[in-house]
Length: 226
Image 1 (cartoon, helix red, strand yellow):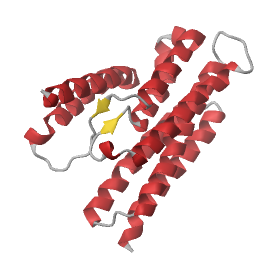
Image 2: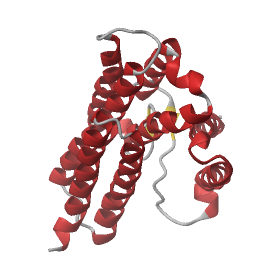
Image 3: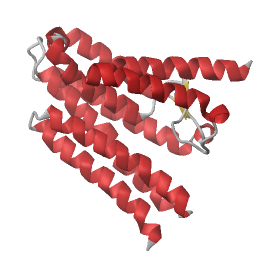
Image 4: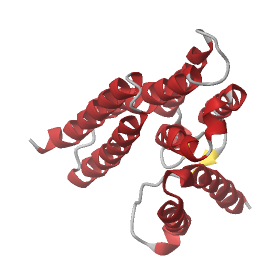
């Protein structure tokens, strides 16, 4: 029975992603963002539970990628599609550029599955962090309306995030092999600073969290390489 628990959590990730996709297509981007948060929680705990119970399996790995493709691939693409649909460039075709996020997320996930360098850390931005950034944009738009109306800015964000997903930038994973401070110092620092930013700025903190994540990763792996 216990071998099915991680897969059940992965399916919950998938279900949350489906719920978010439907909500995003209906224009309920707030609901889509909360669905992403739920998917992220399920995505974290399915691997954690699998390791804890010692029931990791090949089918679990494949199921995880398929679920992530919906929750962290299709869903952010739909959110960007909706934002481009409401931007200042009136075109029936331009919004489909948002699905670059979906295509590059698929490439990112496929690359992760076959890249032996990514057993402990990531090469390229991971899809959950990318998705969290994308779904934060509608919230930020409320305080900065120019963000949502600028087609050029939204397209630039789409291109940059697509590049980061398949880049060769090494990013540390947030999975903890132990609770030891020395071994996980960079992760603790990141989580503490991120919590402070989110406490003060809410969803507007996410772009800063993303920059912090990449910057700390670059500094961390440069220090290791020396």
